Length: 542
Image 1 (cartoon, helix red, strand yellow):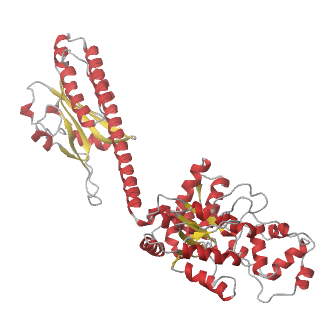
Image 2: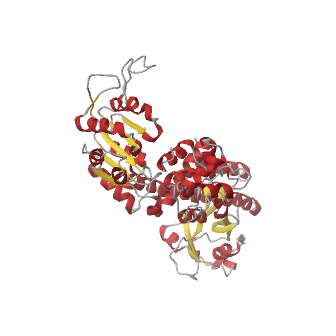
């Protein structure tokens, strides 16, 4: 394939249209092969000289000097050139409004100098006049714009004795100046995207390398890191771990973290919620049963302890374990054996126990509701899990995590504004992380806004806790003072604080109002049936 220069020599002086087409085709071919502006722009200036006779082309760009003091004059310098020596390129620096090049930068208007010898503003700074041909030399400078603002100049020399119209050269240069601006804008966009991706990758890499992101536990507050440190120190032992803390503080995640940090990480992890198992089924669920142990036991079944053999079992809300079963659990923990319901032989199990409760087990021991020897067996390594109020600096990270998870689960695109995140940090969160997660998911599902502000967020936050009277009134007085209309249904947003502080009189009044129907009484107080029954039992009413 002939080179552009040989092609130029083979064409007749009147075949400029073919030269223009060849120039454009070659430039677009270069852009298709590489978006690197340095390579494309220098070759474009080369083709301008070889094919159209527009010599000593240069691209002058605004100097990027973010550290310059305020009020300092703006400058621009030659960044790409063809036909200029390195020394000439170094001299090509212009202040805003200085000479022909500086004026084009300042005004954004093209400049055409028909004869550089007759133009007093022409500086001849980069190329001395004696270095140019002796005949009349013209100078053309066009602005390079990005977003309608000049960021540079495309300029070249032109010998006036050529048999080619000046307007034709101007038309080609305008197209090339526009193309240069688009290339530079694309380069800036790619650079910004790359910078953002690198910053995001650095944040993610840092999060993966910090303890605060281990085991799915999000946050970096000192109380959380303290609990994590204690967890990791005991994970390699076989000692029983007792997780203490309020409901909703993430006990299951911590229990799984104990399992993952131990040598049993590749073995089963079985979780059991003791408060969700009916009393009559506790023994068969935990320890299994033999065929014929009770009506309907047509086959034998291994219990949760056997299924967790060589792994970890997590007993959540262990304070709900019936007193009769506590001795059997104690024997299993001490001897490593169990006997299935209806069975005679002992089954050996090797299980690491992690237990959790929000109750005061020491008080339950004093009240006779929990065995003292089992309490001491469980209380080998107690770890206190901080409430959300103790780790407020983690609320922002947790909220963003829950928003991202809810958006993915429900195909939404909801974000929290800075003032909404600040509002979340101010809320007391009596329901801890569970309450925060529920509020975020409800917000993502029900909001009509893409960006949730503080005012919109308040609509989804629980109301303030109800203040109960200091002195309890007799049941008959409460019944007499109750309105004739039925008790209002539970609100959409349940108040965690009030739900955990119903007095004996309120529970009794709800039962009287609904004629002993516990399901309706529980609903009127915003409780589940199990929560209502637990409160009745705790108050000694059942």
